[in-house]
Image 1 (spheres, rainbow, N blue to C red):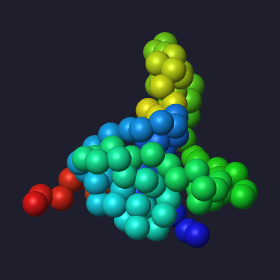
Image 2 (cartoon, one colour; image 1 turned 180 degrees about the vertical axis):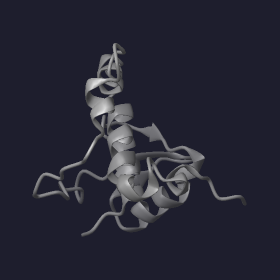
Image 3 (cartoon, rainbow, N blue to C red; image 1 turned 30 degrees about the vertical axis):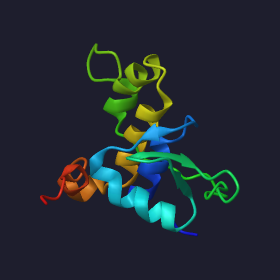
Length: 121
């Protein structure tokens, strides 16, 4: 089973386990993952992973390219990656890495604006 970048972002939000509220921007993806049997809805925008059908989709580790400034920091600042780790929130760290994973840094010059844009309804 292949997961899109958006699928991985939503699954990253649920990485800590338990019931979690999915933001409105990812609601359609969560519904799609529910139809595929990966998530279980709990009313409203609350979901959990389906432990019976959920397996680790990445048999091989995926490599994500992060800019040096993110890992080592620029000048004398604390590196952004270190700040995220200090927060001790796995979901934020996974979301941050998933955004970099889903973007084409050399061609977009950073995180693509299409990854951050919410379609108007």
